[in-house]
Length: 164
Image (cartoon, rainbow, N blue to C red; front, side, top):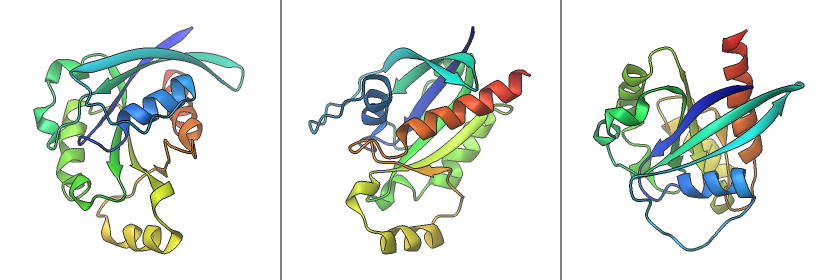
């Protein structure tokens, strides 16, 4: 079975841990607990009959991605950059953050994810699409579970495609 390391990163309070827990354990907590350092767990997923073990690192939030220790990126195959659709400050520096992450993982997969869509309406999402400089891959709600499995299955498919 193939194993791949995936990092969840982004500013503090954007829902990285909630996405992590929703995907791994199908649970959501309203309580906000700051992640200290990193949490690691794994989940085996099935993509078209092929098993893939995702080793998921939930990294403590940083306002600037260049503050994340470089050692966290060693052996990484994919990065999920999470922003909070309700907090402009979490996507104002999106371009700069993604440029930095591309330097850290030049040949890997970088997925940009807008989280907390359960808190906004469709009009807000359309306005958001016009105001964010880079395209994101998916919009999620860790609270309701909307698109969470799809996010990780999409990453898994891309990772398997790289290995064949």
